[in-house]
Image (cartoon, rainbow, N blue to C red; front, top):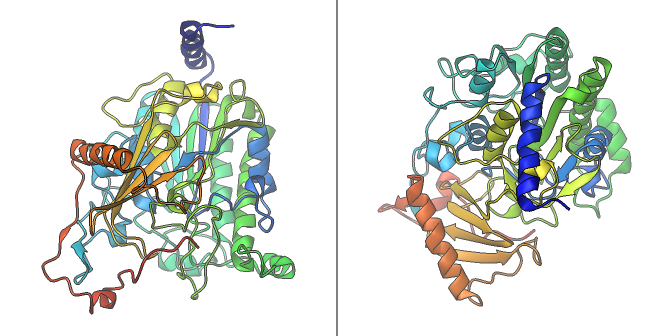
Length: 473
């Protein structure tokens, strides 16, 4: 049996070998608003995801993979930079970054509207190493002057400030997305066409493909024949029963399959790291046509909340020769960890960041030498989430609500659904974790909501603020 020093040495040697041999390619597929249990590999009996399942069988599943935020833009900034959204002050989706709620109990801070150009992105790191880089899909980190091509990407398609499309079919998508197509084209398919083309054109050189889909974000538009298929199998007793959404999931899954097939066809699979994850949890609020879009059960609620349903997301990584096919890791990883991991495997480095490389975990280590991770969402979300921050230490998770300085404490090992608040029963632990969380907020210069002198509970709902407590449903 290897000693700890020998084991760590072998990891370093492996990374060095990767850098010295033919450079690895990187494909990063990001789903939008995609829930932890929205895959058949993780228990869904309604959604059909054979290609995502195929990736799970050929790579490593991270059961405790997290997004850096319960909403989109902050997570995307974390993926690009390896930094916490709190430090970047990109804490809301761009259109929700201003303080538009006037009668709420606290005033949410104004978040940045673009990823600053002085931040170093993983695309810039890789381009300096000779990689061809592409962002194909949803950027949502800034408009003109702050586009992917300003942040290290050689190729950009559809990447601007748009957080969603007006329609998934061409030409209707043109009202919000600058991307050409032909009548009847489906956006998920079109982005995949462009991604496949990029891989084919760069098969002889190292490349980094970032494929952030607009799917499965609203509007919930899918191909009619697929909708009919899921309408026929929908079961009202199953909380996952929305046929239109299931049809969107299937199209996204087909995209994953086409990318994997392209890598196989071009004999690139053995030298390409593939990542599949999501920017936040699935939508469980009545955001679309006054009905839940999906269910994240057993996790609590979904997008817009710092409960597990809003931040725990499907996370799969395949690195041939390293990840054991069908392996499972319970090591918690976060959006901030992708950039340093990719940089290390490319033989580069990133300094001054919050993320930590999880190359050790890919080799099978149960830990990457970190016991704490954090979240900061100081906003009222359209999904009825309230301003909060959170931290996980081991199996314990604490949530701090900024409106009243109240905390909730959960043990995720015994209560993944966050149904039993232990803050009173374990007051000493709760106080210790709260102190550490507040220290982290200061360390990152996080923006904290301030009391609203014009708070009016009778008028709070006029601004679309949440009404009543969050339930576990």
